[in-house]
Length: 205
Ligand SMILES: Cc1cc2nc3c(=O)[nH]c(=O)nc-3n(C[C@H](O)[C@H](O)[C@H](O)COP(=O)(O)O)c2cc1C
Image 1: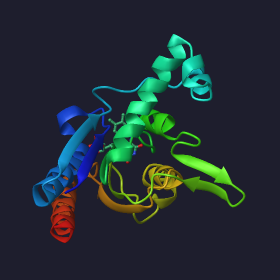
Image 2 (image 1 turned 180 degrees about the horizontal axis):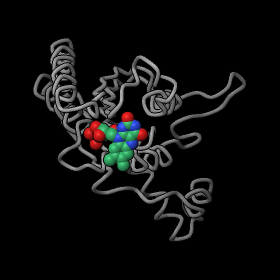
Image 3 (image 1 turned 45 degrees about the horizontal axis):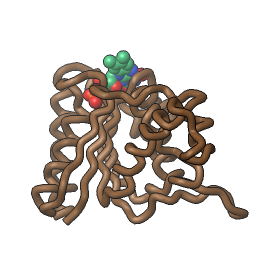
Image 4 (image 1 turned 120 degrees about the vertical axis):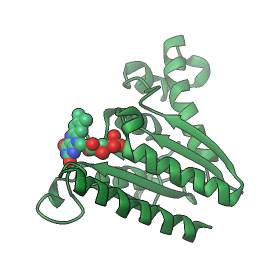
């Protein structure tokens, strides 16, 4: 039995391919493991941008926080608590201007929290959210896994780095890419990714 957390972030609503494949993975794992599934759609309910209340609130003792600081920290705490109880995290990200959607960046700004999800010691930074399995689905109109655009993938590599920084290092990446190269290319890309998802679920069973 697994606690599965599904986090989606595309602003494209029902057309989102990252959300579609991430949901398929999360529901497939739930069907196989009999676990629970918690969903968080960051596009429907985006966390606010972080501000002074959050930055100062998280280094202030809970009983000394202002009401504004407490409210700001509570938002981050809820997101971190969801991560802490999850055994399996399925994350969907669709490329916007060569990077991740801003909704997902804001989520990382909340959950990347010193002494809560990462710490520093004499050896450097240490991620604290260990022992979890992550499936990362990244969608893009262009092709970034190979070819001339590889250096411009500021989505998959960046998200992997952010996940690793908070201890989420066991990550399986599923890409859906090249969908902007005409309808035949889009259909072929969807078929390839569908097969990859089925293979992944067969392995996860
Ligand atoms: C506002 C916007 C910006 C985009 N920027 C890029 C981009 O920089 N590079 C790219 O390859 N595709 C870009 N795309 C295409 C998306 O990455 C593609 O549609 C992808 O499937 C989006 O993920 P989703 O299907 O989960 O929404 C952009 C799409 C939108 C709507």
